[in-house]
Image (cartoon, rainbow, N blue to C red; front, side):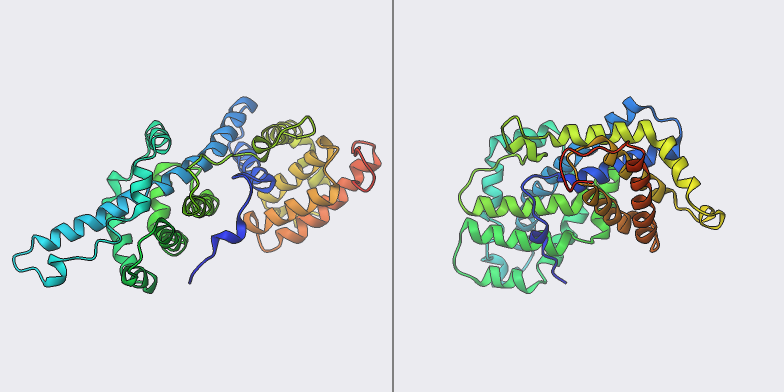
Length: 331
């Protein structure tokens, strides 16, 4: 099944929901470990955010290794004792694709790839398996049969490869787990940006490192830093977690408490911290965000539980005068 990654394109790599998820994971980890300091949590958050862009670089960097595998296949076929006519005169279109040549010659891309110490060298078997799979696909056959050669056509082919070969790939998941504890959940975001990069390259633009935060692409005193947002969110959630988790416990019955999923408590605590800490974010937005996140990091019952209890506790804090919003309609 073809999965279109373009449906989740963002102006920047880390939008507010992704930042909330990253803060949630760090806070959840600190709750489970019970000995993580705030400074360590902040460090883990920063590493996690930067890891998304590292994974983008890593996945975009697979273009040249895959191309090299194709060239090796061609040379091996030519070296056979009695090669066929097709093997003696192979179709070199993919092996000589313009995209690999472009990235190989891009000094900024290669400098950063080397600086991050990224490499596909030890995953030769995976690369060969991917290439074998690609060669069986109709989209590859159509590409090879076309007599036209252009960077745009090569970019479209690799977009299909990113969409069809890497989404839900168990082999790739294992590789990412070996490389970084932060990478698996970031694959969709990173592949999305790879596809967006391929589109810009096909339009004649030079490769540029994507911005992590929306605030990196905007100017003006009114621009709120996304980096500061996620840092403040983690700090406020970390500082108030015991108080807010106690509020959760006080507002559930004994039966519910026994079945209370720990990630739900963390999400509700974060929602309360956000409602109190950020006067310009509407309460409805905050509640909706954590309800949506609970769909992916909780149980089938988490959505209803987080929605109902977070709404109730936000109202409690508002009645106590602890939630103050900067405009009408935000509470």
